[in-house]
Length: 299
Image (cartoon, rainbow, N blue to C red; front, top):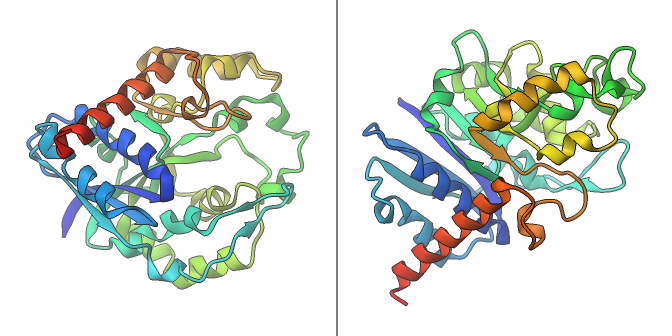
């Protein structure tokens, strides 16, 4: 059995974000221990696959290797997921991560990463932070952890929207460490399909995973999935001053910056002006990807 792997899931043009995330991950990986990166993808150009697979060699990271995989067969017939409280739906690709432990059952631990991230740490540390008594390790969702609107008694009908009354320990799904054996012992692909096909929770797959593992998730420090900019904490979300202090204190020590939603055109790849140093880091990493592409094609 293999020890551990990092996994991304992506479709279409979002492969550019995956390339940025993998580049920053490799730039911060300096160990000799082999590191496997698995990319589950659909509708991605073969030329992009070939390019990204060359990144470890181009960046002089011989211990790392990148494999590309087709989507898990269990998810092939999934339809867009209608969410309570929202007019939009979630695409089937969002649920691929729920099948990863069954798909890659030969690993002991998996680190799932969203594509819209910048890695600023050696990811090996994250595997060590999941102990044998928990199925998942993840970071609390900033909004639910610190907004007064979600303190008990909540101003929001969270039971209707999310299936739980207390949202203080609700985790964000952008960075998740998974204990493969424990996960598969709790849920098989058929169980997961039934949950997807018979529910309509707000935030879709993220809420489903919270409900599935709310009693067996270890919460990680905020720095490992820093979901928002400093400006986010000035927006009118009725923040609890005491609860946001640990988040603000973690800002100088960010290990993974996750560009989670802050409203329309808020992510760095959705606008041109730079708003902070992390947006600058994204563009610098994207520039590095372009340089690697140019070198690979000898242009």
